[in-house]
Length: 390
Image (cartoon, rainbow, N blue to C red; front, side, top):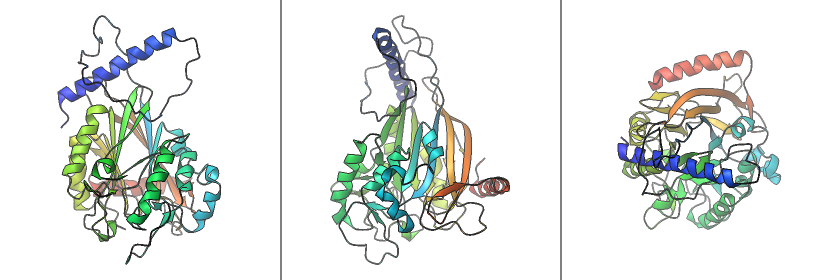
């Protein structure tokens, strides 16, 4: 569980930052921004701040105003295979406006289920191998997506020989306008587990991406995709010690911690034992929101302790259309999150709203309307029951 000391220090840093921003605004002659910012944050929080409580920031300074609730939107698997590949000819319209609901949130996060770059060879013995050009990153950013995890079972479909082009494309994406942060992959384990930091107004959000094989061998057919101290690869949480440590570290410097997991057994609607056991451990370590994908279908979502867990988000931009007559194969989950309001508090999910979608013949998601939404609500109720969440 997050210590009182780390929570208090984090609160003091945010309160001090708010006072500094207020002083800066008073001296400025230019117009103030009219919309919240979710630009990447590269600043390192000071470790010398001390907590003083909600009423004052010390030395007679006025208290910082309570942070506003922010919205975080999540979708499941995206790639650019088959019918979707030609859309990358124009990255600006490749997935927009299909991603309108994602783009409307303060922060939008997805799973990019493909290798990105060039070169290499298809992984031997793998039935499905995906690879997209660097334009995939530009397409996500243009569609209003802020963070993509690549900790999954397709990021190394073309082997480590392609990783040089992958990391070059990631650098360009993170320096772009708008920027796209990429998590879950790195030149070593430290880089793979490093979170993306985004600031929304005064609230810092940390996003970690990780993968676990569990009982599903398709999650890593070779067993050697994990990044190590000396080898590039994915953030692998099969042994959760490193992942839990990364969550605790992120929690010390962020107001809201999100963990996007690639987990579960493909095709299963109910979380498997590994998902059920790992989710509460992530929450206890400091994760406020845990979401996941890989099963290619929805799984239940709800509260797990003080956190919010959505076990499976399904497909979102995918080359295989939803089966005829299916209620949905995925959707956008938008969470309204209230940042901590006290030195020892936690972020709280105040509201959860689903936009169920079906994937069309063009590979793009279309929102479910009319009677389909009622059927979706019934389906989610059943999925929550088998997931053991409320």
